[in-house]
Length: 330
Image 1: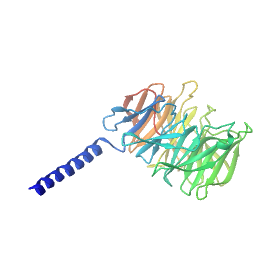
Image 2 (image 1 turned 120 degrees about the vertical axis):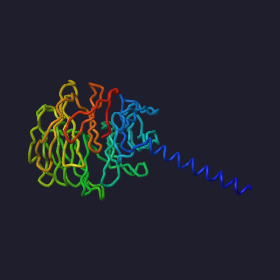
Image 3 (image 1 turned 60 degrees about the vertical axis):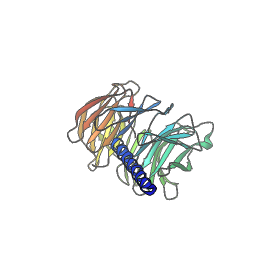
């Protein structure tokens, strides 16, 4: 009799565990989106009904959040030596760092590591670095010492990291540095007369770059092997501000705005196999950030306090989500 009771209890426990797993799976979708609201709150947005809930965890001084393999996000906490990790719609842990002032985390799909650049230090120059995070274990892996101001980072399939930077010693020196990630060494430096605030690799040799300080409607095409600008792509709008790659198509999306003046509108769509603009999304003002899920583009506007849901097959706005000063994961 006791054995029968024990067996029944065991079956009930197993059933409850399986039921809980099903409930979690139902309510936690890896295609849901984390949204930074203001500078101290993370919201979790459902891609099914476009409703969101706040995650109860303070991340004051976080300016940007980063998508990690479509499963979790990293939120660098600028006034601490920490990165907050969110997974399954909730706070998971903090990653402790060696150096302070983490600013932006960039996930590398080719090696499953995340590369974090920090606010540049003038006094403590020996602390300037790029921190590497093992994104499987969510732990700091190593530091690449790098005594330059970092603007942006992108990666190529042949294990290269490309860094847009500026000199601490000369305001007129702007570089694109190429690192070999097999041994984390700097192997090539390109010099330019202007600073590129945003860069993105479209192949192992070609990167697109934009200059936020210029209102001119151009994206610059740079060849790593040739070491210079080989083309300019004229865009449909002034003030290119941000750039995103759709990994499902050979498309690049350029968001346009003058952040300081809170002016500008529109998104240019580039076919990067032809280096040519093939379309636009005209009716979004001050687009700040973008997140791509399957056939949907989620585009945030700080000015409008909205996330626009756009069908990327026809570029039509299908929905508008009201949320305070939203910033989407990079």
